[in-house]
Image (cartoon, rainbow, N blue to C red; front, side, top):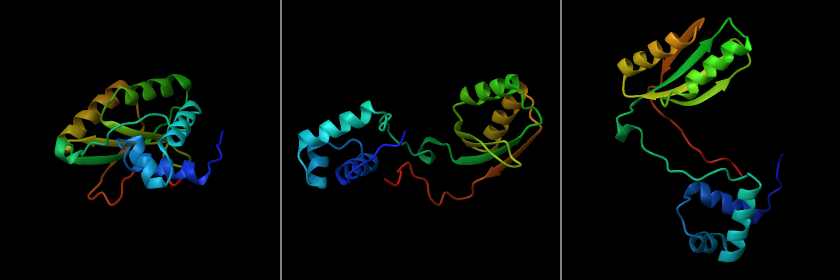
Length: 153
C-alpha cells in the first residue's frame, strides 16, 4: 500500500533518514514545526509501517571489512525445496548484506562484505557446501562511488 505524504511528512522523513539520532526538538526546528506535531506524525508513520526501524550505519573499512563482492548466482534448479535451502543459507550468513532474486539470465545477486579474498573464498566454499549452485560469478568492487540508505521522498 502506498501512503500519501504531505510536505511536512516528507521533511520529517528526510531528516530522520539523514540523522535519526536528532531530537524531536531539533527536527521540528529544522523543518519549521513544533515538537508535538512532529512526534504525532512519526508515531503514525511507524504505526502504518512506513518507518520500519531505526539503526546505525557502521563504517565497514574501519571494521576491517574492506572487500565488497557482488555475487551473481545462476541455478538450474527452480523447485521450492532448493529455493528454501538457498534462502536459508544466505539468510544465515552475516556476510550477505543484500540479496535479490532477478529476472533475466542471472537468478540472484548478493552483496557480500568480507575482510579480503580469502574470507570471500571461505564464504563461497561454505555456501556451495550447503546448496548446489549451477554457476557463481564474484565481482570485486574496486571503489564505492555511492552508497546510501536515503530514499527519495
